[in-house]
Image (cartoon, one colour):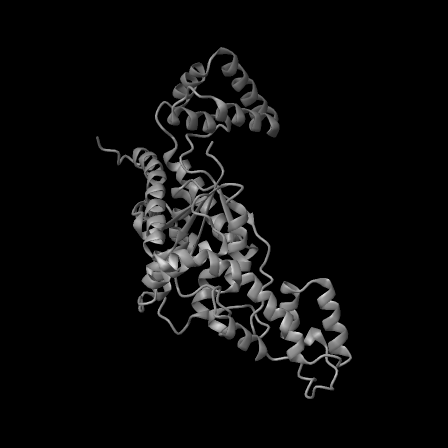
Length: 400
């Protein structure tokens, strides 16, 4: 049984905006205090769609990591690393490709969707078709059993589960598995060994899920077992073979409530964003220029907040009293649109203030962020090497 571990990442494709903060980064900040977390700069993933213009990638890497720290991601509580600096990602991707059916990749919902949405680009490449497999390799390399995703991304986690299941089925059948598992039970000790066998029997004969969980907990706290024996006994519990790659579970996150300046979802492709660390004058100017209810042609015309994009931002940044003031003032024409926008401006600037403060030391000394990433890459490689040692061994690639 592997420890709870979270793996998540972002592509370095430009400055992060408040949509990234509300949709992803706030959740990362929460998760880092609850689990072991690895946050990855997915630069190889950026190449799957931006291979023809890589000029933005390198600068975006460092800007993005500073944005993460500015948002509250703490290098003391999470591992921050760059995907391409851990070559085991590429190796596991290659090895998984040997057993992953092509049809599995072609049926990923976002594959055809992205092909249609990005019809102006040539995405008829293996890199694009295979990006879900690379994504699976990212997760499985760290045996990350928890993956924070929105509902629309659950299929990516499901294919990762299927790939892990297939890999374990093909390569987890070691010669003499049952004999080795029985020998491992004896190593546990008489009392614990007997309890393990009782719990295993209850689960396999009666389907007692509580017995399965109790047996897993027993193995997790047992100290005198090698890594290989421990994984054999986890597999033996369920009647299968040795578990090499764990099946990941989606950690569902709430959908982002952050609208863009035009009322649509905040996205760089729509040109409706506010950057995480945008200048205060620019923020104020953008919000003041936002469209409002078309019915309010003159200051004295009453309006309807439900028809105004600014109202959506009030849902994020305003308290109940302010929202009541907006509804009353807009419908009665008691306030003008510029007045209505000011609390939103104040709310955005208040949210950004600590971000500027956290980012400043890294802007003044860029070597600090590079040191954080270097340390994170080394930590990530240590974990990756552990996984690849086991993968190479079961695939007949562990040459002495």
